[in-house]
Image 1 (tube, helix red, strand yellow):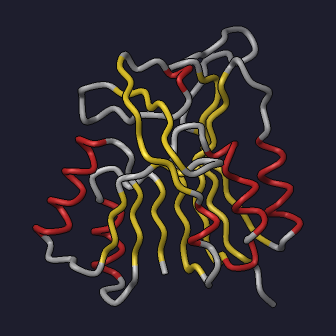
Image 2 (tube, helix red, strand yellow):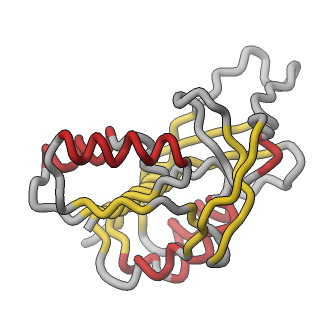
Amino acid sequence: MIIDCGANIGLGVIYWKELFPQAKIIAFEPSIKVFEALKKNMQEFGYNDVVCMNAALSTSEGYKEFTYHDDLSLSGSLLLEKNLGQTYQVQTVLLEKYLQEPIDFLKIDIEGEEVNIFPQVAKNINNIHNLFLEYHSFIQHSQSLSEFLKVLEDNQYRYYIEGEYKHKGPLLYDHVNMEQDLQVGIWAKKFTT
């Protein structure tokens, strides 16, 4: 089972289905326009067994404000601090409902909401074999990267971190992009002996 949180137009899903044609995949994408492209791509590739959900992952089920930009290349976010110019209501669901069985790969790229939903992941960490998480640090909030890494370390994961921003003189100049001062990708694999 592969779960793609923040599937965008489905390029990751296409890649995984080409590598693992029998894989069961659930793809979450809250943006209305991007979700339409995701569904179209799944149809074009003939992936009838990919479950596409037009929903955001959050701390509660219901509806929340979602900020977005008309340009499909920009992602949207439940964190309104990103202030992408426009908002509308999106459906929200709990990720933990989908983590009750073994997960081969969990990808989380949800533009800041990962900080809020990570307790759901931590509670079900033993069901997850491989994980990719994009961590965003917003200047208005305390940084919490160490909390993510601590959960991984305490549960025998090996991880690799890639930075998104390249700073020239990071201690001399502040680098802020869309109210973020840090964005890193964390790749983690359950270590088994």
